Structures are given as C-alpha cells and as structure tokens.
Image 1 (cartoon, helix red, strand yellow):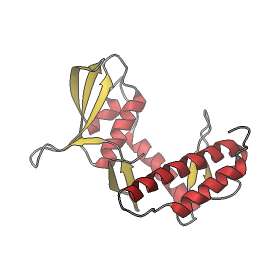
Image 2 (cartoon, helix red, strand yellow; image 1 turned 30 degrees about the horizontal axis):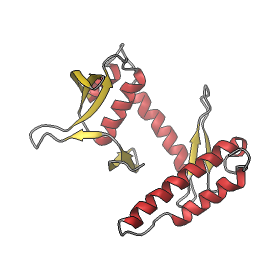
Image 3 (cartoon, rainbow, N blue to C red; image 1 turned 90 degrees about the vertical axis):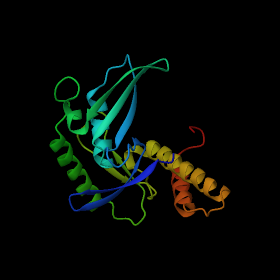
Length: 198
C-alpha cells in the first residue's frame, strides 16, 4: 500500500525516512497543522489509540489532533486534543512519552547494529506475550528459522506488494524499481512454502 507522505525525522543521532498515512489539515500560516482522526462514537478510545495518535503527531511534527466521532456515517461531535495531552487523554496516564522514546531508541540501536545487509529486507518479530524481539533477514534462504512458514508468507506478501507497485509505475510510464528485490523475496517464499499448504 502506498503511503500519503514521506517524513524526515531526527531521532537522537539517527536520521529516519518514514512513511506516514496520517491525514494532516493545513490551516494556513497563522495556525498550526493538525491531524484528523475518525472514531466510532460508541467505541472506547484505548491507551493504544492514544499512543498511536501521539506517535503519528510526534513523527509528523503536528501539535494537535481533531477527533471526529461518528455513528453509522453521521457526525456526533468532535474534540481537539493537543499532542502533549494525548498520553493522559483517556483514563489517566496511558503511557509515558519518555519511556516510549527510550524504548524506541533501544530498538533502533539494535536494528542499526544488526541490519547490515545493503537494501536488505528484515522482519522484527515479537511473539505474543513475550518481551523478547527477534530479527530475521528475509533475504536469506532459511527465512526466519523456527518461524519458517510465517517468514515465507511475509516474503510472499512483501514481494507481491513490490510487484504491484512496480506495475503501477510501469503503467504510468515509469520504470520498475524493485525487480531484483521482488525476485529474491519470491524465491525465498517458494523455497519454504509447500504447494500443498499454500
């Protein structure tokens, strides 16, 4: 799936290029930009939702979120929430921004030291209920060791998306950009997925 924008984000000593789907409303030079969210009026805004909004706003350098509540397509109100208030917006403190940033720093340092293959495709995996994360290089033939089938399916899905993206580029007069990577991922998927199961 294509993202709405690419965001350049500086984090500690790293410069990151991130894709973002956040809808941002530009209100002109005199007012700050705000992100737009749509929520079901009857659903509860969870701690994870608050974290999601906060991360999107932080990465996009947006100071406020407009949340529009709807029921069966009809607007039932809205609220404006400052980014700095999102960690405690619902039910007290949902999360500590400093702890989130420290955790992100730890994960990024881990990735920086272990993702060493140029233009490699990696899978960061955390088993349900576990605190431990595992990193697999999907460009290698074993495709995730003990998680062979899941790794094979992930290779297939990524390759398929890259293939579709390239087809869109070619159809609009551009050039395919991902042929080698797509072929490598398809080959890895084929090497681990059996015809009977998939």
